[in-house]
Image 1 (tube, rainbow, N blue to C red):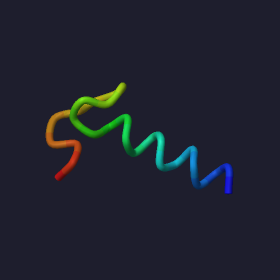
Image 2 (cartoon, helix red, strand yellow):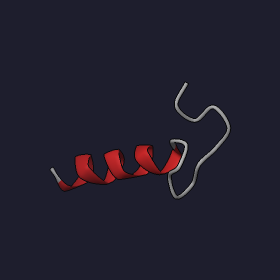
Image 3 (cartoon, one colour):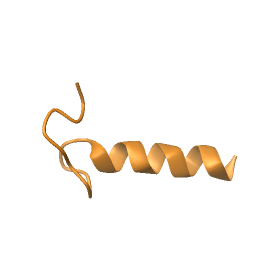
Image 4 (cartoon, rainbow, N blue to C red):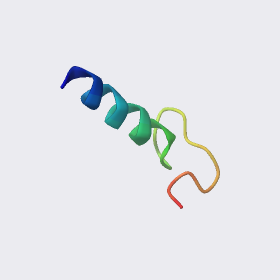
Amino acid sequence: MDDALIVVDIQNDFCPGGVLAVPEGDS
């Protein structure tokens, strides 16, 4: 389950407003 939580955190980081936000990251 720890791996799943890490993956979710990474995905959130790439969303706008996230730590690693990228253009159209939530498209």
